[in-house]
Amino acid sequence: MLSPIGAAFALVVLVPNGLYSNGIFISHIAAFQNFAVVMAASAGTVSVLVWAARHRSRLVWWACAGLAVVGLGQAMVVSARTAPGARTTFARVGPATAAVLANVAAQVPPGAEAVVSQGVMGRFGGRRWIYPFDMLFPTGVSVPVHGAEVYFVIVPSAGIEMGTPADAAATIASLRTRGARTMVDRGGVVLLEWHPPPGASRVVLPGAAAAGG
Image (cartoon, rainbow, N blue to C red; front, side):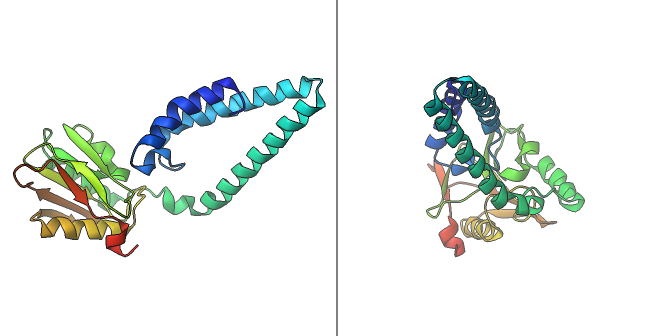
């Protein structure tokens, strides 16, 4: 951020991410597009610090040194908070769950709309419309409805999921009360088929408050 290059990358990437209603795109865990900012800001910061080390003004040198210490401290704090949970946060999908997901993927038509747990949604990317089921806000998440059928693939406890199993359970229960049909419920994977009522343009999934969070 201390260099023009780092600042430019931050503005181009982080501002649109921050304006999006879903906080996952600004998250330090799941927002892969932010890696460009990390690389550019790191390289730019080092170049500025090298320039400052050669600068004759002691005020400039001490100012940059202070900012470098603050940046190092921030990195250490973030690492201390995230590193201990890395094994569970970045958990792999087990073979049994992967096998069920392969079967589920074959049941969701290519031209359908799918709402999929964001940690496993990659294999469903060929669908005409696809939306992530991820971190839920207290007031819920609104998903556009495009077709006569919407498929929900929810994996509460596998992959990199920002929501909790309670969030997933609340959503599954809510969809079933709206008439969603359970097609698969095994191996930690739930596949629901929902027919929206006539005229429906969006569906609101319950938030963390509904799950008692």
